[in-house]
Image 1 (cartoon, rainbow, N blue to C red):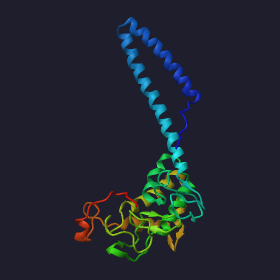
Image 2 (image 1 turned 90 degrees about the horizontal axis):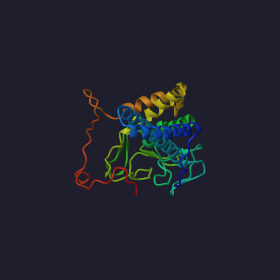
Image 3 (image 1 turned 120 degrees about the horizontal axis):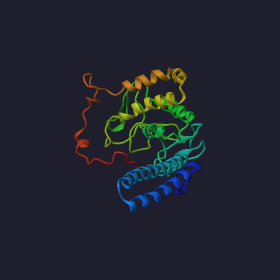
Image 4 (image 1 turned 135 degrees about the vertical axis):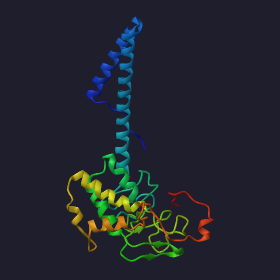
Length: 260
């Protein structure tokens, strides 16, 4: 994907003009020598570093904006061989090249502080995640995999079907062999809460927490999601009593984010 060349505002252009004037005086100071020249050199170095950092940040800001824009999949569109987006709103996938054609909860949550995801998009993705949360009963999949009560999906396909395990786009009972573990990733439960928190931080409004989603207020869904992973009562560290089969323990460990 091509990126636009760096552009500088009028204020930045004025800063660069002053910068070059300072450089001219620096050369005079160095020629004359003495303490004045040394002080001017230190001041010039600090200003040069600030100007360089400013232009680099602007470049990264523009790049981030373009990547987020390219990552949007509008209703009726698809990407990378995915199902058509039938959610009724624009979904945001990780990256803009279609390598991960689905809505990944963690990637979306981590992109919010970029400043290029709107409050409306946050709310739409939050509602979709809430609708796809597992119910109060544990769900057993093939190969000994388990979806605990109130679990949050790893990712959600563009057709709105949740996938609780990485490494696959299958949303049915066959979501892998256990090579990525026999419990869904833990972090998505907290990323779900993070999306809600960031939406509140952005808008200053909390009325969305009272919205019913499949018969349960959104706030209650956030609470049950946060409490779904089992943690040690003494230190809060995640724990599990599930025993992995020896076949899984002895198998080569694939990449954490590998998707065939």
